[in-house]
Image 1 (cartoon, rainbow, N blue to C red):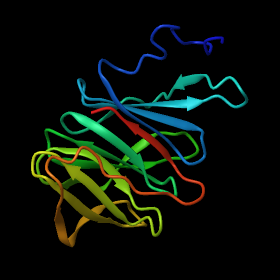
Image 2 (image 1 turned 90 degrees about the vertical axis):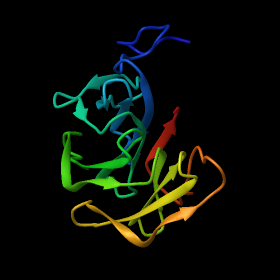
Image 3 (image 1 turned 45 degrees about the horizontal axis):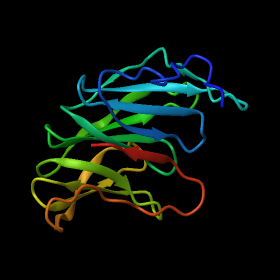
Image 4 (image 1 turned 120 degrees about the horizontal axis):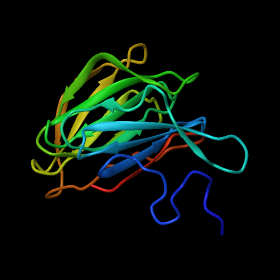
Length: 183
């Protein structure tokens, strides 16, 4: 096994102080990593071919709310969402697929109940977003605008769950974004 060029064989790529979650856009061209210590998202371009080498995006890092612990990309790859545990919000960003850069979406913060730990967008319609809310033992729900990525609460936006849910997942069908979380 040979390390990817540009990586530290023991630690991989540097991604802030305390990386907490990772997501890859549906095209497989970009990867994003949240840093819960510095309240930022780091963006990288993935090299074509078999090397998989990462190059930091010039516009990166991007500010988040406090203590970002989860990240997801909606199925079309147009918007990125970050769950901010201490802010009790979800930050939303537009994704420029030509450059990989993130920009603020209209209505860029969505309020959840206390302690959102995971964020997911259901893949069937790609317009409903959910967070598992650890401290409130609930799931928050929002609806995203397909034109702007802005989030608004659904009519019954807080759903009871098991005690202290760690994560919520949407099951994709077909080509989709990938994510992994380590709260």
